[in-house]
Image 1: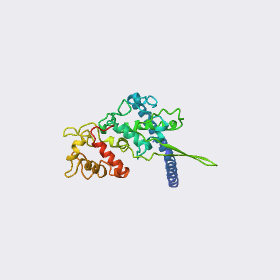
Image 2: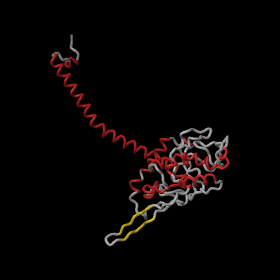
Image 3: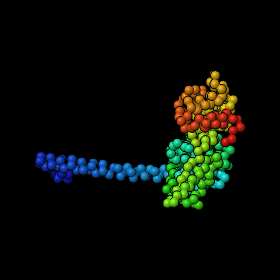
Image 4: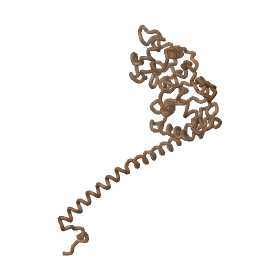
Length: 298
């Protein structure tokens, strides 16, 4: 009987079989160790790959939806929308509005929830709501991709000179002042923020209230806000929310202890409970008065 062609692979010696088995195990261990050593760099490369893809997708979303207001290269459109590809925006924006999160959080929140109640601002175009969670057309991953694209400008934007920076200051934002101290040896320049109470319009935006409450829509049985109650007729609804509380007391308590009373139809725990720690008593009182004013300036 003729031997099959693979007969040369047969190993007859038991010792040889053991040696080949040991060699195979050692080779497998070496391969596994090598893969483990390379895994970190491989994962880092894959992360960069996904970040690059996210930025590319974000560029497409920006080109289709954002450039008419913020400019094709993010330098803004005078009178229409602010600049985003800006050194001032990346280095000072969240500080000047008093936002407690990161700049990425600020951008993501703005894209997701928009600025629908800022209808009387300095810009002709109101920032619309984009996230599907708030009634917009974009999925949450698309909101993140648009955010990644804007954040991608940071590396070059922070190199801009003051003359190159296209940023246009926002109205009603406290401006820093410079205090110059001359000595015989050195001249020291320090920058301090103006120690003034922040206006309620600024607080309403920087603390994220604008993401959940619409200042112009009426709150009725047939017209509810998506996340929090509308405030177009807050002065009429507030006195009737909690028995024994007048309008100012109710709004004040809703800010500092938001879960003490939750308006019917809304979820408890949605509104942050630490607003009382983020504002001075004077700022809270001013915000309450502003919210209850039907002719409030926005």
